[in-house]
Each structure stands twice: as structure tokens, then as C-alpha cells.
Amino acid sequence: VQLVESGGGLVQPGGSLKLSCAASGFAVSRNWMHWVRQAPGKGLVWVSRINSDGINTIYADSVKGRFTISRDDAKNTLYLQMNTLSAEDTALYYCVGGVAGHNLENWGQGTLVTVSS
Amino acid sequence: QSALTQPRSVSGSPGQSVTISCTGTSSDVGRYNYVSWYQQHPGDAPKLMVYDVFKRPSGVPDRFSGSKSGNTASLTISGLQAEDEADYYCFSYSGRNTFDFGGGTKVTVL
Image (cartoon, rainbow over all chains, first blue to last red; front, side, top):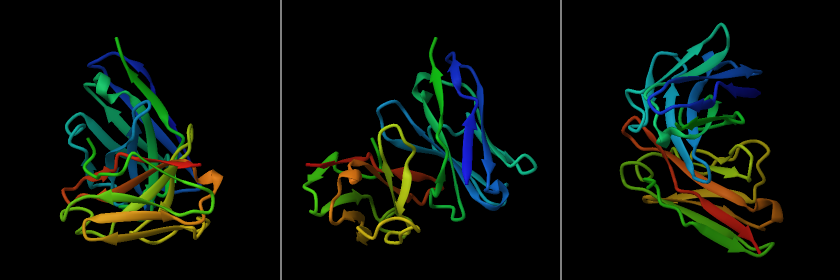
């Protein structure tokens, strides 16, 4: 199982960024997928989840209305569209998946998002 | 501030046992058996150590055990080893279509 995140980088406040998570040895279409973030030197924060049905999604209050989780089954890839970014969104973003919706079984190595002017 | 409360640090000598608590409410930890625990070494991604309160994934040593009483879940590390020094986080469904992590506990092996 390998999950590889990409798409992070430096973005100005108010800007947008789209993260990707390419899976191998692991079918995103048959698993529950999450995004979890970790600000530098801080703890883990749950961000969002997409159900194995690919339809139902849930979000942390801090990102609701700004972030959108989605997946492309043909590309076996998970996404996180992030809009209206602020400094508080600066973090390492992890892609996580598993067969149960409430467990974080398989983790990527993360992609760093820095929001700064 | 995290919705789940963990001690900031615990420590123990090699071979000893340490227990990390994770206190929530009757709406999250107390209501659902969906508590899991993660170990994170510096610079690494977290790793699932215990799920569904007390179950261990394949490959996790049986020195790691989980339990729950009321609104508090616990992770116990028995026979502490040097490689157990890491940060540990609890995670739970919060019943409002969201999930929460604890603030994390640094385990130090003396």
C-alpha cells in the first residue's frame, strides 16, 4: 500500500490549492479516505472524509464551505480542493485511507501547504 | 484546543508500563467504540496502533493495549522499550459527522 500526496506549496492568503493523493496497491474506490493535517510543531487535526461510496463527504467545521474532498476512481486518486486559504491552514496534509470509516489505517507521507504573503 | 484531552507527557523506565488517557464526553468517547490510537515518531507519518478501543492491527506488538471506561479511553504500553519514545494521539468519532484527535502525548523513555 502506498499513498503519495502532491500539490502542496506556497500560496498567498485568499488563494486556492488542490492537493492530490495517488494510491497504489490500494483502491480508493473501495476504501474510506480522509485528509488529516498537522501544523508545524503541532498536533494532528482531522480535516475531511469521503465515504467508500464516493458520494458522502464530511468536513471539520474549520474548513467547511472552503475545502472539497473528491476522488477519481479511474486514476485511483484522492483530491482536496482548498479555497480561501489563510495562515491557519498552513500544515502538512496527510492522505489516509482504510476499510473502516472511523480508522486511519494507511497514511501517506504528507504534502506541505504554506499560506503566506 | 482539542475536544479530546490527553496528558502532554508521560515517562517511564525501560520495562515499566505507562498509560495514556484520552478523555472525551458522553457524546464521543463514551458513546462510540470508535477510539483509535496513533504513534508518531519525529519526521514520520503517524501509525495506527490500536483501533475500535482495544483491537491491534497485524504487526503491532501486544505490549500495546487499549481500553475504555466511561468517557475515558486509555492506551497502555507494557514493557516499555526505547523505540516506544514518540508522540501518541487518540482519535474518535464525535457523533456530529466529525472526528476529533486528542492533543497528543509525548512518551519519554528514561
